[in-house]
View (cartoon, rainbow, N blue to C red):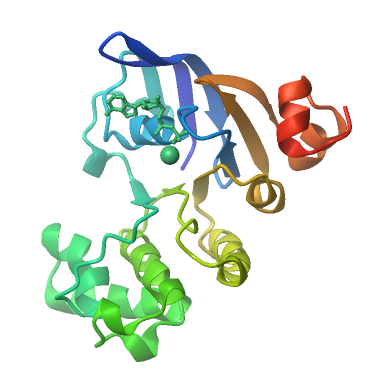
Length: 238
Ligand code: ADP
Ligand code: MG
């Protein structure tokens, strides 16, 4: 559960090839970080996995099944975006419960799952508030709560902390890592921040212009960067 495999995945927008061809294996329970400079295709790759974009070629397998044609809601994944995308007129409770309500869950089930998620995320005391009455970190937690209630097998994070100030970012990094451990789900985390990559990842995927330059643990990349680009990006002495 929660394994993802990309086979010769390509993506072009018109005649602009963004991802020439990617093969990648993500194992159940891994925390995988896609890292690389702005514009290298990190978000596009995540959106392909989520099903928010169609591949131009290749296959995406989730738990061994071909998911290439599956709509996002059928993939068992939940995405957490950079901008919180909360509904300003709804309470925290309603924001977190929204995906379940849309899926037709009854009120008692929605409340139970929302309260479980709020407890994990330290939001229990804020359930009746509106997003504007929350701090940036709390808003980001609400966005994560909305992903948790669906009990996904895999979380997809697209630069979730880039709108937070530096001190809060360090805290939220730890929180997301702990959450990942606690929920036992697979996580794919996109960032252009090498510190985030080095501190959070089990496995780092270094991207450059839509190609994978290297895949490895933080230590492997630090000790044996495949090339100068990786070395420069990871900050190791090659
Ligand atoms: P990153 O997340 O690494 O910053 P993106 O995946 O957002 O990079 O973008 C990679 C490339 O794909 C960029 O050149 C971007 O302009 C292009 N791109 C992304 N989405 C679209 C789109 N919907 N239509 C056309 N070009 C796009
Ligand atoms: Mg991006």
